[in-house]
Image (cartoon, rainbow, N blue to C red; front, side, top):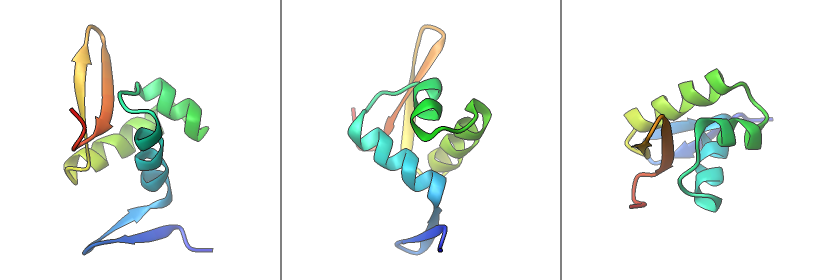
Length: 75
């Protein structure tokens, strides 16, 4: 079983792919919501969200104490 999906010139691992699909279905999600959807620890979700942000695939906006994450092209 492969855990990596080809994405243009780079690679997207399984958790990153699940995060992208989750945000596609439910934009503006908190880390807690994403972690719950993926059934991973919050710190794991946070790590992968920051990796995806470095790849310019996701971004967040601060709403009070909460970061709401969405796909980069979502506004």
